[in-house]
Length: 207
Image 1 (tube, rainbow, N blue to C red):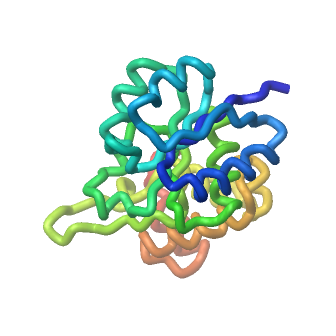
Image 2 (image 1 turned 120 degrees about the vertical axis):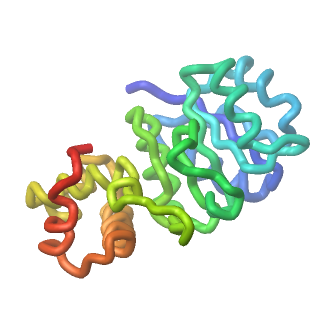
């Protein structure tokens, strides 16, 4: 069984220690370091040869999003999970242009973090289902562009007759996360039933 080495970069050390406890309970993960200082981050990543980094949106003296391109350039195989108290829209982040591997909100619970970590282990991108996608009144966004890749995957599996439990098993997610995704899909597209959802999305390309 492959074990993935994980680093945490967050200046709220009490929060970071809480995350570290979750990581250390996962059989495929090993905690390599915790740091609250962005200045030594590149050195720590290289020193500990980590595969996964949990990166706060603010890691003094830097902005985590501004660090991200540099980290990806130095360590192309590093999976970076951005952890933030901010919704992407609060910081003018276009989630479709996000170059990280996961975006998780600090308000979310343990199951969301575990799902995100599992997605990274399986080489999948992950977006917290509690992310709010706001439509600007001055900008037309098609129904298809509202949906994330994960949501399109879930729609395809719903169309194949899969239950939430079956979808969770197939995508290595918790059933709660799948149900949250389904709720978000319905809210984005304004659908009230499975039949309505499938009718409205039947023209979408497969994810």
